Length: 291
Image (cartoon, rainbow, N blue to C red; front, top):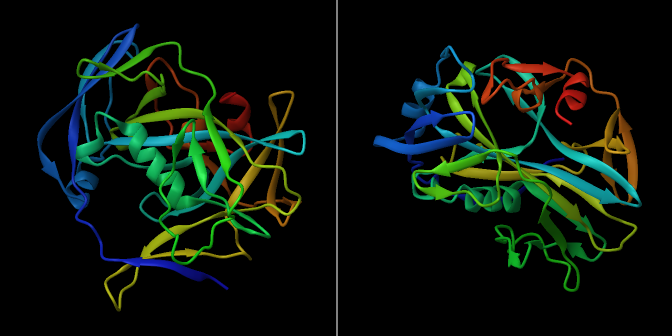
């Protein structure tokens, strides 16, 4: 049964469109125009086309940010994926942990990603819920009042690998070197940060995903989790290559899953230059393409 772990009043989300300039060496984005609310942003997420995927200029609707996380667990490696129903696109996908970047964090999108990970990536032990650290910085604790923390242990996130080509916000170089792509079907710029996740030694770890929904009666945003439907999946890697096997992690036990009618999000589709043209890609082929 799903459990509500937080209730809050919706914050008026504001972002800005971005002017993107791409060359073979660097992609630069600059916020432009008036602030956009969520509905205005969605209205701009319409398909676009470009002639040269290596060299172009266009205005995109928004900036999105994702974490491509490799988990080390009991001398095995897995990529973390979450399941999402997308009514606006008519599909159900496995995707990276991700979120929209608000206007005040467009120059520092890694801050948005830290908040998203704190809200969505939940690791539980028999002693409580694990706080998280990215390098030397503690992640926020949005559920401190409802999910008691493990008092002695935490999980660690570290940068894994940087992209070969630079990404800049105006004149600011993003030092973490995320992978960047413009997604043509949604007219959006996406940044993907590669990370490693190391949990503490324990034999009863569970991995869950929390999601938010708008409660029609109260008008509040509710965050929920469900131990019976963790919705956080571990895609196995063998020698760094996807095996095509998918698991959930429940009280230290890997439970193999056999999803039906699932696809992978566009982050796993073939990228040409700075561009991804597909709305999604097939499971599990995209895991091999995105290695």
